[in-house]
Image (cartoon, rainbow, N blue to C red):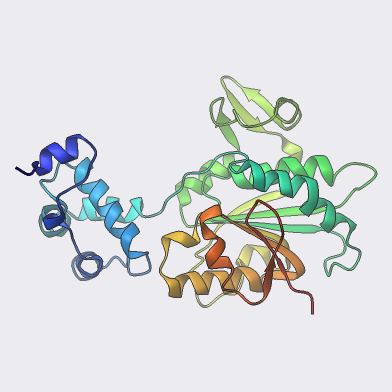
Length: 296
């Protein structure tokens, strides 16, 4: 005898196959009933997110959630739409990536006298969420590019769609748990205590800015806050995988197009195959998913 939807839900196993929903139906309901566009999202991710919301709201099945709760409750449709914007991040999230950035990429950029930007190193953290990736880069640049022997001006631009996430990023204040991945010497040098929390030091804040930006905006080639793009390094980790191929291509073309010749692109570990579709970049031989714009 098959298990009930409730039993499966209680065990975290999802819903029976007969209760599966089609991604196109999710797109149709969100568009026609609530005028919310979710067509850009990767189909399996769209359905998995819907199933999680169905379980969270106590729906009998994913199909019941789609045809009843989602249709009738605009607040829930808004919550579902918001849940598609994955905003998890952390300081120095991928150790291999940040080890490569620290030991090679930043040093290469500082040593390259042929760089179009010459002076200031320009970095874009695309889809920065609550800012930990951008601040992680700021910590490394503060140490490596601000030393008297290798002094370079530098600027980091962080962008995201979520105003609430950007507010956290701009505040630069994080809990003790959130800074647990930060080395002790960096914690002492780059943060100040605020009660039980830690605030990014003022000298780092002078180099970092956050602004809203939609990576799917086809009318722009770079974040307006950056004025002209021209980045030496772009980080866009764990963003591309949530979109359909057409949107992946649009975002990837924009990221690569914003880089100067010889500039670096860093993506998430699961996004290697997506990045490899661009003929304008070459993979850097390393454990981290890092690419470099081909020099003409």
